[in-house]
Length: 220
Image: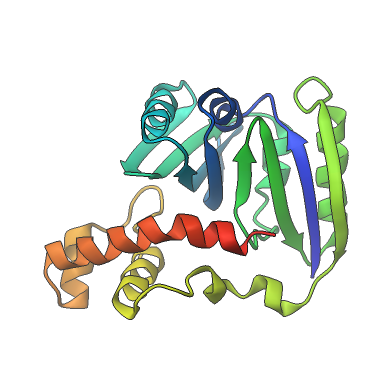
């Protein structure tokens, strides 16, 4: 498996512009991608770090943005479906690529860590980003190399969650709760786990709230 790590100054992404404006750090993890009518739709989880009021402002501006198709917020966690058009988004979110850790968006810059079995796909990402000088005025390569299995073991993302919180979160993911369109309700998830809705909600929200610092610790 090949991994590509780089920092890019992105003047096209509303996420990046808003992190700079509101002094927010955004840990972004893409969870779904599809194309429709020549447009790219990207579904992702955003875990925000910063002043509470600025997080509020960040979320509200993002919710109202013209490219935002769907939006949901749970305190410092956002679930957003965003519509994009440029070719580089197709490359960055190509289903053949793998995201071992969240993209860190801070102060107008994005730190990416992506992987693939195919080195050529990663090279194409670099080439395409470097073409767009006005939208990506700065590109810094941190490494393109082969990596071992330890970097891709997803259980390390949730090491400190109690069993019930981890189970609730993984159960929500595996049953399409975070997908778009959403495939299941919280009520149905609680029923399938044989617990009350309030108990399931508590487990899930606590798990989501703990993801931000855990993501931060696991990103190098």
